[in-house]
Image 1 (tube, rainbow, N blue to C red):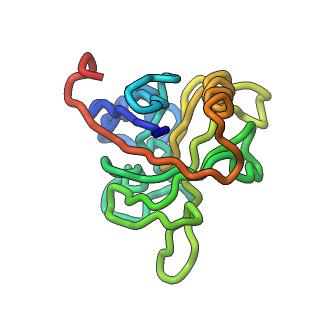
Image 2: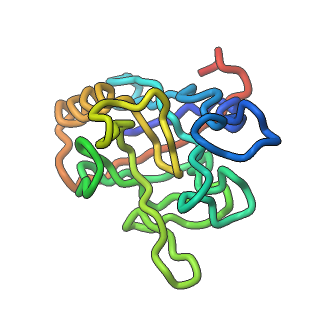
Image 3: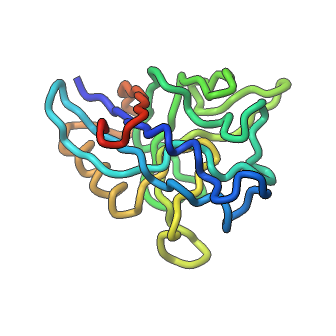
Length: 185
């Protein structure tokens, strides 16, 4: 069975260089992309790359609706991914994170969205860190709850999915594990 594993380092939650200062692009890039995204087929590893799996873009319109600054981060445990979703404004081929729960306990539904006070909120994805403004990957991954890869890694990940026989709309299992020690990942 095909499965996505995210191996999250607990150091990823400590993304501010100066925790007492306001969030912003110059402060929220500590411990960036320390986590691993792994594509498995049964016990065989098909693909592995670094990713950003903790919300570090936590200000302005991306501020969490809950108690934690990183509350829109997908919580450890099981989730699903709908492959090759409509990218809308995103670069490359993206994937929707569905049937998940965030760190604040809010459910992410089968449309990769949350219902907050009766309104649809957010869109949880696996996508790259490409900037349409600069025309290349940003130096750091900025997550509002999504799992972020380098552009080249997203291409390799997508090729691994296609090689495994996956197509647009397929749904595969995912699971997030956490570790205190980075070497355990």
